[in-house]
Image (cartoon, one colour):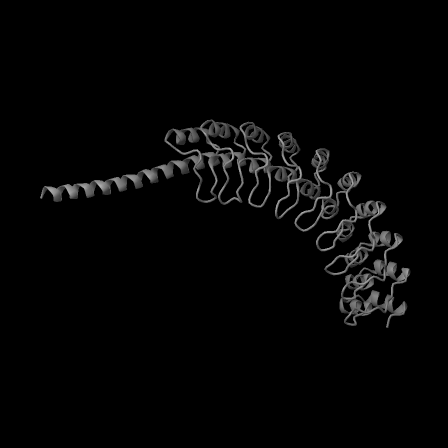
Length: 358
């Protein structure tokens, strides 16, 4: 009977221990959650209270797998960052879900200079990479945070680190038009001809979206290959021509850009691209530089055909005046006249007929 009572009591004690352990785990989870919430809210008193109540400064939240230090750094809460580090926060901990970022990366991305300097002073790995290969320097460069770029470089950041699915610091800074950052990176030895995962260079990036002429000039002055080709065969001249950046086109042509280079996918030249977009001045520039107005795409399309489809009368007149074949046919037998008819451009249709199109 005694033995049975002892076994019963032992079972009760074991059950109570399990309940206590579960309660303790819930309590710890709660206080850790309080720490994260206080960090997000820039509530220094709340952070102190959570730590005093036993919060683990290196605990990770369930949603993003990030620590309180990461969130404080991301938001630029310097005093909280200082406190967390003083309490043992790991400056190089990586988030489980935010592509493996460390605290330094979002701080650099968001321009929190004092936090970046603090993290670096406390041993943050300046070359730590996200799962995508992105570094703090790449993020700071992309967003134009010059002082942070300088601080990272001074601590030994790899100026030529190459992410898996984006460009080097120089490429992203060039594409975004951050001239001072570009100049700084070049001065620190950035590879002016490095390519991203698509084979694009900084020169291509600068020539494309916004047409950053001063950056294009700086890159060319540092030896950028004006005729470098991306994986698809595209060049800086094609990028500038597509987006109508006349001054960039002029600059590239003056530096020896191949006006008749073709891409791999469509077999288009810069002239064909510019004609299809209706960029009259660029078309004129390239014709003056000897662009082949008879060049055909892989499917047999010409600059004239695309201009007719676009409906830009002046571009059509330029090409016809240069001697473009008004009766040329695509591989399927389509002519410029058919393009003009199909897209509803009667004036261009009449122009072509006067020029001998049938």
